[in-house]
Image 1 (cartoon, each protein chain N blue to C red):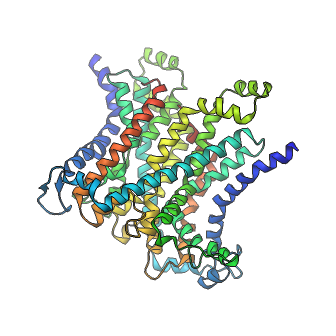
Image 2 (cartoon, each protein chain N blue to C red):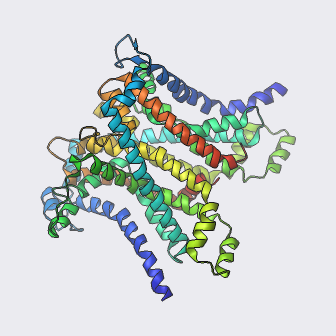
Image 3 (spheres, chains in turn cyan, red):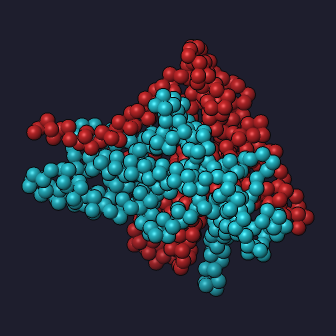
Length: 272
Length: 292
């Protein structure tokens, strides 16, 4: 009786698991089907005659290497920027006493509640003035800091006992050295997990890049994919799915390697 | 030495502070300024129009429609991205004994993918003519309605796409909250043979209040921004602004219709709504942190 009940509770969870995964599985499968087969055998999970035609067509239509590089380059700059500014700020909040500390901290946290629509017009104008339209640098520039990172790093730093720092300060060891030689090594796991999250989010980013990148040569992967979806005369789904499959490889690899770290850092970002 | 010590913390805060000032604080003030003008983003002159843009936010029929849509979005997002993940996290925490870790790993996977990918997959899955769901409907004698023709149905689909992406994320946050409730409290209720649903209602939910409110607020604030991507990819706010919300409409006004003033007034209105949410977050969530 009891075990039967237990199985019943698993049912909704298994359904949710399928809803989470099946779309992706179908997407990958369809990317190896011809357009005709994708219409004729919609529910076939395994293509009858697997083909890589969609991938070769894609390779002719867009510069895949360029797209991947643009996306990778942008995501790397954004990730490094957010990590550096976040670590420095968290260090200040943890180890210094200064005026208006709680107010400044709340101001940083409050930035999470600023809708992008309120900053997009002025920021667009600034990036245009700086002649950075159609450049991934222009996309990255306004995004080099992130309050979530500060919150998570601060939480991890709170686990390092204050006594350690007090003794280092008595020995007059400069903050610069404490920061680089002691704090950063201890924080390595959370730097990896937060960095992985930043990278994946930036890799997937769509809204702000659509405003800045208008020239196809400057496109990132999500923008190129959008072009396939809204193309005239309906979407060629196998083709769009091939591009999507290419897009999800890197985030999946990062997740497979750092899965435990990533899930932990999400937990940390919510714990108050 | 003494003054050096006073400046030092601000040096560490400088990069973040500078970036926030240039790309957040000044832009907010500038958008506020623009909201009192009639401008098209390019013209050299701006016409001062006072409160007209704000009056239009609430009197223009399209804006009214968009505001009602936004309300509809919020309700749906709360159900899909907060209530359901919360129920599921309670099931995983209190009603099953195995596989908790596996569910966490699997549920999170869609969060790794771009919403553009999600929008593409679901516009295939729910394609009213050639998609698999339409196919299954036909086989069983039903017709899948063409949801792109109906604002309300389009909103449901757009919310489902965001739900696909954020479900796992919110689920993990809520599950973590439940995990931090001391085990002896839960054990005590099992010894006293208190029914599980009563334990959850009377003890667990109140104890998990702070993280739940955090996720609830995040659901609204992030959800409305997440919906932007599938909206732009699939419906561009149509049919007749039927699936537009206040954020998407701000974008349309600013970068498609070039009505910068209207866009700015809409953005400020959104910001005011979010500020109320921020106030709640500070009151109920951050209030417990030691930096308060």
